[in-house]
Image (cartoon, rainbow, N blue to C red; front, side):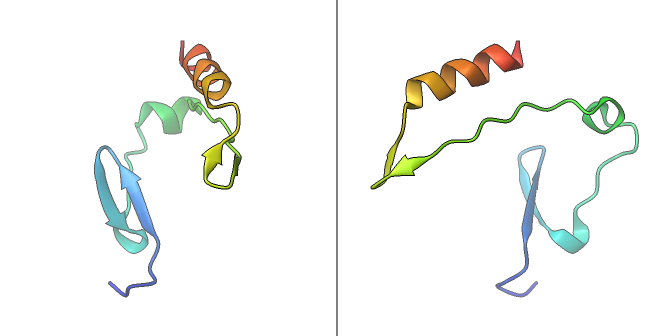
Length: 61
């Protein structure tokens, strides 16, 4: 693996992009499950972090 190759995080482990695979029966793959939250920071400080975390948890419910 080259130092520039993209790493993919799957089930608690990192894989090189060329080795990253999921089952076609994976629940997220079959049903499109996912939770996303965009976070902005200014000067290394996350803007409205508490609100982001609250939205993330609410979306996951």
